[in-house]
Length: 483
View (cartoon, rainbow, N blue to C red):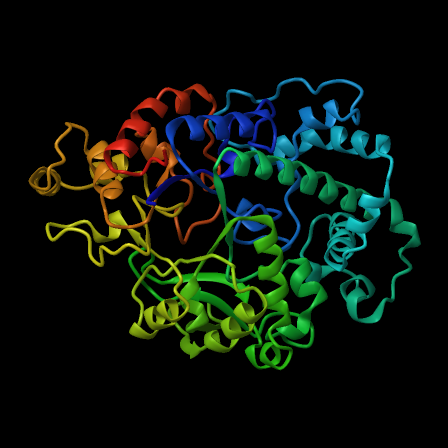
């Protein structure tokens, strides 16, 4: 059965407290999805937001950001003495620092009122929970500086255990408490979605940030200098998005070491992701075939070299242990043929983005086992993308759609219908396109850091509700409604 879904970050949902959460509006969003006939909710990584509030530079591959905790649900659980008042409820942008300052006293109150039980004990004893809790405790103690700038004993705690943690036990337990509450709220929300016939597609970044619990606790898995700084960093060479390439700054994996350990780092990471979501989108999939290796001394991504990765060896081990894991491979960009061979060898569903492939010849590689997008989190919404072309090009694009039978008078609507009528068994439309939004709703511009990236939010749930009927009609017309 052909499916259709929506790309919508949790942070971009409406909420009473300035940023989307796992609260009532998320449940209402799922109700609206069911009403519209949408069966896949693709989100962005839920991990703790790092540099530039990017979900692709997280402080951990396992932990979730406490900004997603619903204060209202904490109140209903009896962990808050009063319901938190509304804060920046109507704002159309997320002020992350302000929202965190508002929420902080409520989260600490909830911790003080919490009574641990055996379920909490079992959760907090997981190695990643303890490691992350210590990491964040030290990070906050050091003014949120990167761990490379901490005192030597804290910097080397995972290897040397030189710090007596008794003095920090309350702070460590607080961080573990936040992760436990996040886990409970997320599992309830996901179960609600699954009961409504909706699958959650999670998103796992290929790389982890240098300033992360992953690198701090497991330095052997990365190519680092003796002081912990990266010898090489990740990115991509010059392309459509960036003249000088993209210098991401993430450390490069030590693939020789990973292979000797049967890819433990990756398998544990993927296994946890598989437990949290129904489908996993793997960002920058091409790096399982070849990755761009940039000397850390280079100020741009122009200098570097392509290095082959042991993708086949990794996935052979993965599917021996987790044969049912469903992966969507982000295989966008100028790729060598071998990337597609790797993708197809394991029957991964690839991606095609209309903005990159729309021309008079139609959809390239219009096949069934495919995920089609009008755009991703890195693209301008269709409306502003279209407006960026000269009038002559706009006329040509409209003529192309009309020739294929799409002539509703709305370019955005026609592109959506064109996507839904493709042969692909999965079509994902970003919320901004369902709502016919423009540049103000763009989530991210690659190669840039900071505002307004990752700040857009839908201030009213009524915006989505107002188009659900139209969405359902489009899905019915395209044969993407499950009866």
